[in-house]
Length: 413
View 1: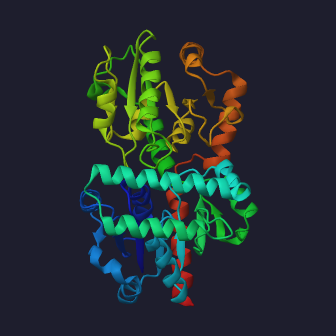
View 2: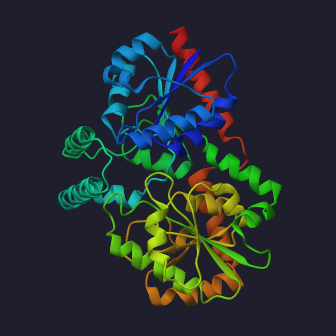
View 3: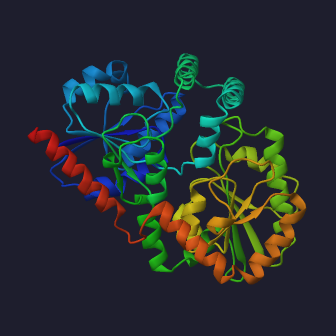
């Protein structure tokens, strides 16, 4: 049997690795890196794939995806996204014509509120979206090192996708089956017209790692690595690439970071760790923001997220999926939403929400000193189950079994 895994970022690879390890050793596994924004990012992914001992293909073969599939003859193709690039679209299209099953395993949380805005207020949402694409393009031009050809082709792809009469959301790319985090996403997809028989609730492999790290209970090594004493409480800020995708300006990011840094620095025996998003953010941008602050936060990119969450007392985010991972580890989640962005987290789901800068320090004092009450804890537990299913460390096994079943059916067809 042969399986192709499509990847365009390192978090997706990290999610796929536990699944791949659950497949029989006799299987031929091929990773296809379709990230083509710039050479540096492409090489980072290639190096990580090599480190994980995964077989890859030459990126030039992506110019003819139909030929690639005819030559490789996979029994199944696995994706982490299905509507964000022409490569994903072409793989699904050609697989369907060749009767090769495709499985979507999303590696992020989808926001029902955002999808509702697209469906109801389509004109205003589209204008806003075009503006965000414009900001993304301008930022890429300023930073340099990108592929002009891909910038133009991607822009045209997004315009063609989003100009359709019916919104094209994640999960609507036409994959044979979708392995979703939890029941909430299944219900969302069904409400949008996706066939229930194509949706499998499996949980997600990234939560398997959390389960294992949480069970170990040991966080002293990471504290030592980061230079944090055992007496200090750790507050982790989980960022997202909101500037890079055009949702925020650079000034808004600066205001957001400084509001949190200033508030945390007023708390006794607390250390702020800023975990930047591994996909598109740069540590240098954050170092510039805090360079004049008397008490410097720790800024990191490649530290193990599960170990960091296991160490922390409180996690802060706006909309990062890592917020759900923090909740799955039993950590308090605070959503600091100063610019009224759409977020999958709210009070009904057990998150503490702060919407104004002046409310941040009082909220931090209460949460750090007193924690959550039982009502909020129950809401958080319920939200985790709805979004991420059972936390039993077996999501990768469930997805691997689904892959084997789909490949077996393809071979016998």
